[in-house]
Length: 485
Image 1 (cartoon, one colour):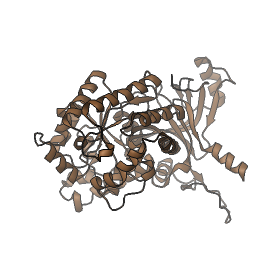
Image 2 (cartoon, one colour; image 1 turned 90 degrees about the horizontal axis):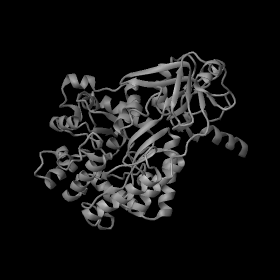
Image 3 (cartoon, helix red, strand yellow; image 1 turned 120 degrees about the vertical axis):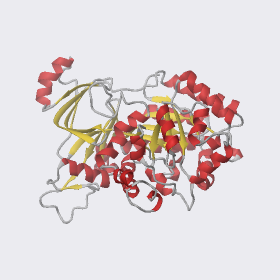
Image 4 (cartoon, helix red, strand yellow; image 1 turned 60 degrees about the vertical axis):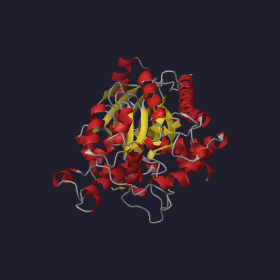
């Protein structure tokens, strides 16, 4: 089986905004982007309308008028790269927003493990995973690094749904043979490896070249895995070079637990390194309380970090020092971390990343020990958090050469964003939902983007494409709603 693709070449016209490097957005006004039927960008032309594209670009590409699908960004609209969620738990989607008064370890036992265990039921798993994928697509997430459960059938179902619904995904069967309830554990390292191989083989069967869906080795976190399990997973990774995802240094109690369970290791990062799980294909979620020595080791191994500001705040885990990580040479992306995080929106994670960085700049609380010069640099700009949400995330999941921007050769993973334009004489009785971002027309595009980051939501996401395939269309939903009314 091969991933579904678009059957026609496509022309996109209007304003394109993307991050070209950390802290810098590029605005391509009145541009044309040509995407072939394989979902790859084959031409980018500035100052080009449809007529010019048909006259100059089509002949060069061997395209014919009438065979090309044309999408135009109107006033107040722009194309933006699809968001990349570098860390989320698909089976926890029903619990998004539910924390109680827990911190990490209590929350796992109270809410998380029972929900994940219940998805051994395939009908329930289908119900949850379908809505999770549909909701994340609606928020503009074109790539997601998913933790599934310990169950092979429901993990495979998640991969199937990502394939059929068109979301680019990394899907990992969760490995855990310790520190969990008896009803939700792998029985042994041997079983853990066998079940993991079974899921990998299944995904390879539905997507042989991992073009859309890729398996990812997923030791939950060090305390949940025996030494033998981690050793076998490390050996498996060295053999097949698959990506790895796990957690690190999220909570101070968790860190102490790691010290108690692995006294032979100097720190948390060394545990993963000892078992060959700290690689250039490793995604480490959270990384809040790393020491300098740990950060240096992670940088040397070229492992990556998924920054999860929403869950870090919701579970009172702490504030990750993103600028410090970046200056260490560590690639950083954003993760929603549902359901530790309360929202499936990467845009929400971006705004929270900016706000959390502001807290690090305040000379009080947990940041009081930070040097003054580092505190001053800690704040992340709108442009920087959007980089983390797109191009930075692409680097973290190992797709930096494929997605994250609008260069020729990259695949068309994109969203069409629409901001609400306020008319000259708005009607007092207008009760139509125009979204949460009001644009009056005098704002620069830099300011419009800032308003979108801090006020936007899924209502601004009109369309979403993955590899050129339209996977979400709010304009269709609006047309249906108008018809029904």
